[in-house]
Length: 189
Image (cartoon, rainbow, N blue to C red; front, top):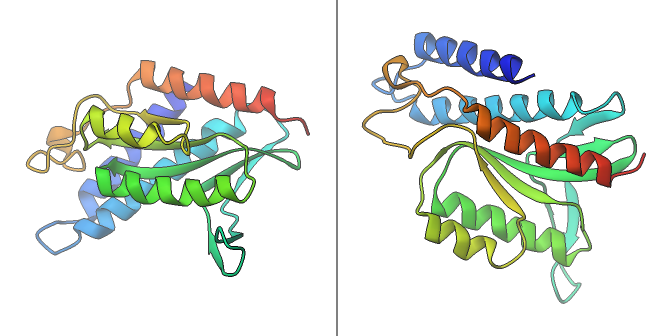
């Protein structure tokens, strides 16, 4: 399965290189497409765990702590084993502190509203200090962060440019796959 995930990633980036340009002001579109690519990778890997697996982009209506106002939100991928929610994953092209804080806030609302399934972030590149990541993870809303590509993000060497493309690291893939398998075993259909 690692080869499949690595191939999807490489082929998608080849397509991005040929169809988008920062010079034309398409940087946000590139980041958005790369985020969707991570969603596709998560979906592919989750569905390989078992025949009873599927993902949704389901939105949940949550109440504030006073129980008086609601907000609809979700993480990018809800991972299901049959009719049991096994985990939720936020998918990012790169993870910086602002993205992590927003994801943690959403996770805190999910936790406060009774969601006990594991919550994680899957991203291609790291764009924050490890101390910052540990600070946010220390609140206990998010369970884990998975960085699929080696090294930190460098805006001067963007990985969507084929000169600086970073492949998915097999060790990182294995860590994510192990986590997903544990989520699969933890959910009963």
